[in-house]
Length: 124
Image (cartoon, rainbow, N blue to C red):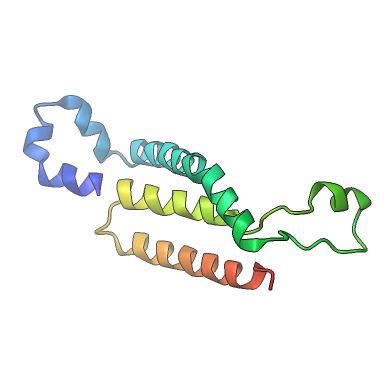
């Protein structure tokens, strides 16, 4: 989205040379990494608390696993990958070239894998 704004206001960007950095893909990738990290960290604790309340018992522990898992992993909420997917989605929508069809294809495939993973790992 920011890239599209840059293209729309390209004549204004000429007055501010620092804004020309947005046209470089490597700069946008770096900014997308920072954005994804900030989104994932910012939503982290609230998301974990929400998932802990929603899932109740948390991650099921197998009886044949290590004994330390019974103590340390008991009550751990699952689906923490949704924080990562939210960070990726925010970064792509903010910094990606949304006119590129490959961006949309990869984003939709990533979202589909996230939906598949969350539907198969939710304890019932």
